[in-house]
Amino acid sequence: MAAENTICRIYLVRHGVTAWNQDLRYQGQTDVPLCDYGRRQAAGLAARLAGRVKVDAFYTSDLARAAETAAIVAAPHGLAVQPRAAFREINFGQWEGLTAVAVRERFGELYKEWLEKPLGVRPPGGETYAEVAVRTRQGIAELVARHPGQNVVLVAHGGAIRCIIGTALGMDLNLFWKLRTDNASLSMVDYPEADKGILLLFNDVSHLASDLPPVT
Image 1 (cartoon, rainbow, N blue to C red):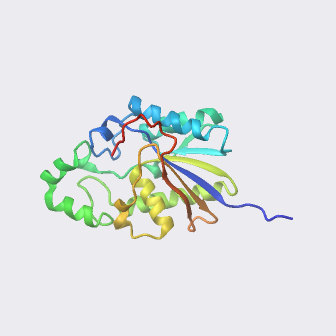
Image 2 (image 1 turned 135 degrees about the vertical axis):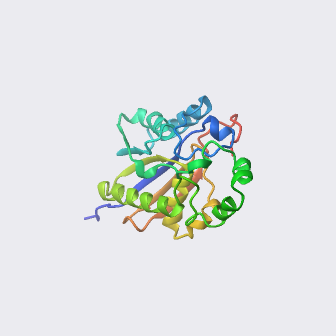
Image 3 (image 1 turned 90 degrees about the vertical axis):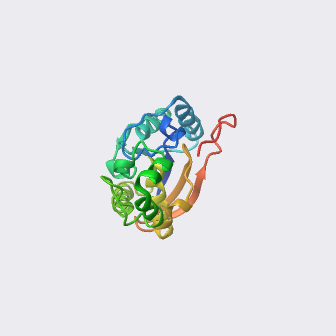
């Protein structure tokens, strides 16, 4: 008799583009909706997964840009999307709505310290990347426990996804910027156990239309 499959496979999706993505503004936990371009991206990913992957559950950050992306991707599967605050983007506090240039001008040395050691540096009114690591790790543990042997789609944010993948790889999360996560990208991680992630696919955007301009 074949051994029962208990691996939870999580398909990690970054939300589609927003107007703030296009303007290169820090969004954090500000509830910015998708733009039309972002909805088109989400539709491209929905078409890729529809009929090809048996999805057992859909989860999302409870922020609008992720929840809307998740709803578009989940629609062909007829499954409800379950929101989880654990997968929100990092809270950038007073930096939200500002470009990197503006943050550098206003917060100088603190911003430099954050770029070098985000695990321990807190943007004013925000959270550290170490705090993001704790909540995303707890969120992943919940999903793995609830869905052994199943396929789960999780729609989240660039910072949260870097944290999840960096944790699976055993990275120093101060180096999370070395992991590129494009809007509407697809990554895959297998979890035999909650603390033993195996990266299968990273930042795949082959489902996006070639006529769409790249977004940084």
